[in-house]
Image 1 (cartoon, helix red, strand yellow):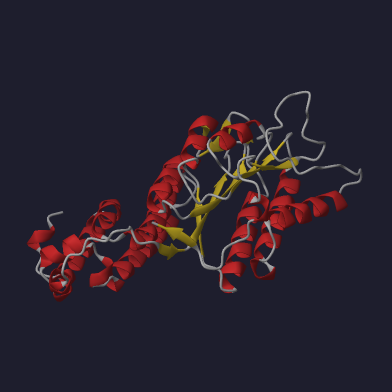
Image 2: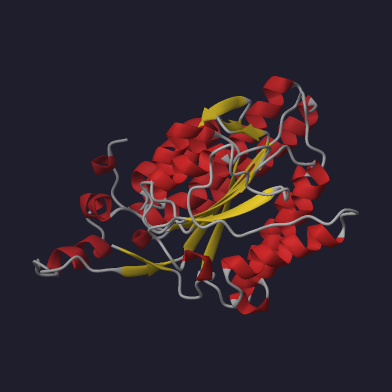
Length: 341
């Protein structure tokens, strides 16, 4: 879009709204090009809703009337979002092109040459990946998703600075890593998995590539792989400097996996976020053990315990701390967010 053809922000917003009613996808693709970084996350959420709508249409999971209603609601939400945008939400270079008062204010500020890149406090981002399989569905995955979101929202309501993103595809994962660089603090995966990868959006996402991606995030504190037999991914993640990993040693029961994960996040997020990773893990372990007929044992593993002659334990989940990041198990959800350069 040639922004120089518009006289002001209102005219640009009108053009975006006209684009919306002609082609929703085109409008959703154009919006991130014109908005500052902090406003793009809302567009991604709207785009995810659109992608889900298209997926349901392609798979025949909704009637034509249901699809029509959902599309109308989505278009109305996007229209309301565009209407709410203000000059300061658009990229400065676009505002400057339009020649608005905001652009003139920017132009009057004398240029400075800072000696050090300033840091800002941004919300910690929790990326929650839930990937169900239409052919082999996990009945408790939706419950796990809702309960974890609720636990983290509880922390947010109590004053914690956290942003919760739920995604279901590999492309969304990469999009959010680009959008929230330096802010991603935790990643949870729920779904079918193995030591070789995670099943996301119907395909097996290679464990090597995922570990390499996660290694690019400096503030990533822990990864929770709540799928079957994911322990072989721990070494890959530690090689990419991921501080702490929760993984499984053996195939796990769907119901038990949900119970363990929900208890872990509730203990981590409740009590004003004062519990450590290790506190939350041991609490969830105790809950699962209490509901088991046979007693099981567990140790907190601090390093590489990958060989066959050193089995993790008979307990399904293991907690792994990177040997170069001692003290990572004492991490708590931050109230102030994270420092981003």
